[in-house]
Image (tube, rainbow, N blue to C red; front, side):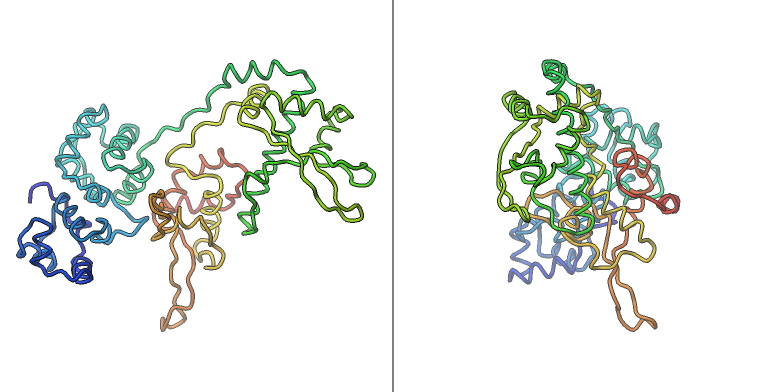
Length: 422
C-alpha cells in the first residue's frame, strides 16, 4: 500500500473493534462513514492490513476519537511513526514538506529515507550520521506534525535508541539590553543597592519554594510569595528585622530613609510596594511593608550587576522543578522510588500514560510506575517509580548541561546511571 509506514506501530485491531462496538456501529456502517469497503474494515479488525495515515485519520474521525485511541500509543511513549500517523500524513507528504527546508535539502530527504528513519534502520546519504545536521531537522518535523520540538526529539530517541541524539542548539545567554542599562545608570547608588538586594532575596525565596515542592510541602502561589517582607511598622526591639532589612543593614544603607528609596523605585516601575497585616506573638497585629520586583526591575538589576539576561528555555530541557523530580527518581535507581513519594502535577509532564487538561503539552514519558512482584512471583506487592528507557537516555545526554543550569539540584551518583544508558 503506497505511503504506508513500516508496521512498527499501526492500528490496534482490538481497539478498533472495541470503539466500533461501543458506538453500536456495524462494519458496513463504519465503512460508509470512513469511505472504505466493509471488507477492508474486516481486514483492519483482523490485523491483515494496516491503514495508511490518511485512512487512519478517516477512521478516527468516523469513530469520533483521536488517532491514538486506535493505535494504542500511550501518552509519553510516542515514536516517530506515531507522530506522523497522528498528523494524518503519508511518507510522501512528509518528504515534500521537509524538502522545502534547508535541513531537508541538505539531507536529501525522500519518502524511503523517512520510512527508514521511522523503522530504526540505516538511513543512507551524507550527513545522516551527523547529529548537528539531523538536529536541524527536528524543527521542520515538529512543524509538519503540529507538535513541540522536544516531542519529536523524544520520539526520535525512542525510535533510534542506539544512535547519538540529534543536537539542538542551546541559545547563549544574551547580553543585557541597552534600555535596562540606561535604567540602572539613572538610579543613585542607594537605589541600586536596594534593587539588587530585592532581586537577590527574590531568588533566595524562589529556591526555598522549589525545596518545598521537592519535599512535597504546600507552596503558595507565586503572586503571593514574590511579595517579599521589607519592614514591620513596629519597633525593631519588639519585632526584630526582616531578612531584607538585615541584608540592607550589612550594606550600610538601612536607615529612616528606607521609605523614600523604595517608593522612588516603585514610581519608576521597578518595584511594586504594598502593605498587609500579620499577627506576631506578644505584639499582636502589625502592619507590614511588602515589595515585589517587576520584570523591568529585574532586567535593570541584572544589567547593572553584570548578569546576562535569562535565555528562553531550550525546548528539549526540563524546568528546574521537573529536573529535580527526574533527578530524585534517577537517584533511587535501580530499586525505584516508592509509589507515594512521587505525586502531584509533575506526573502530567513526565509520567507515562498521564494526560493533562485538554490542549495541554503532552507528557514526556521519562518516568513510569513499575510493578514489583512478591517473592515467588505470586502477586504484585507494590509499585515503584522508575526511569523509562528514554528517561535514562535523557539523563545520560544532558546531565552535564543540567548541572550548569541548575547547580542547586543534587545529582550525586548519577554519573554511573548516565554511563549505563549510553
